[in-house]
Image (cartoon, rainbow, N blue to C red; front, side, top):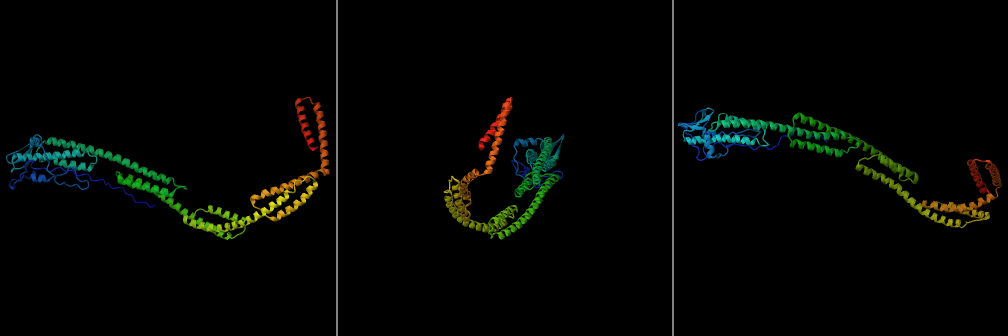
Length: 490
């Protein structure tokens, strides 16, 4: 399995929605009159029209910050507008002033409108600016706000609240901004901690993947299932890639170190598998050559009629075949078919020969059973003369018996035992007659009898003289034994 190139995933989370604040409007009830060229605002203060176009957003797109389009005019309550107007005034020339600290500051001019219209316009601009602060406050509670978004929003609102061209409670506005700035720093710290925790979790999860791969690499051996292990490595690699795509980005040094470990484990597996595959190919080549040699020997033996010896040789070839190993599934099947063909040629011929032999052996069995009837009719015999006559007849039967030939193996012992039984009965009478006429046997019997009688007389004397009960009992037991011997030879 080739090593795939893996890089850290790009964060594909959907960009956050852009939040904009509505552009200031002249008046909720009456459209703002357009200043005439003769009454343009002073250079140090923006005109109402220019100020209306300037609508910086609280939040910009993370990839390319830009001013959002002007939002629809916001509607404020009359009470909110009046509360803001209380912090400003308009002089007779149309100049608009706002209370700023202990004094006041001119924020613009609107000479062609009434004082009420001019003051209401700048009061609404104050409420617009306040709405931007409220929007940031709400955004800070969002779980998906980014650090860059906080910095950009705080920076823009800092510029807008420094000396705003609005009429309203500037002190409260600036205090609110200060609170939000501090809240933004706290949120950034929270985001940093959360990211740190997420990174630690991601590192731990990816480390687990690495450790599984290393454990697989360490477990490789002669009994390894290479296909199953390859599937496991493939699954771990898929898990690695999915983890990159779906989790927080890990710091590059840690990510590279973990990937190096994972890649090293896969390389260990790939090298071991290639080595095993090479060894397997060598073994299969050797097995193929060995089996081809066995097939050649089998073809030389298949036409042999030396049934016993050739059967043993085929059994030896089969043992060698089993020990030769596998040559690959397809090749093994082809080689086995060739070997089986040669073996079947021989064993089928041997079976045909056996079938023929079995047929003649059954005929021989019938002939020998007929002879057994004649032999068994010779007994019993009682005298030596009858035994001699029966022996002569049995000798003729045995000579004819030997000329008949083999019988089935399963019947051989049975009929041989029946013929032996006839022979033993005749021989028993012959032996008895011989013992009666054997002078040497009689002499040996007489001598042994004399010895036993002498020993018994001696034992009688010892028993009569012995007073110890134990010794006397021992002598009596010896006497009883010798008496049994004497009775046996009489």
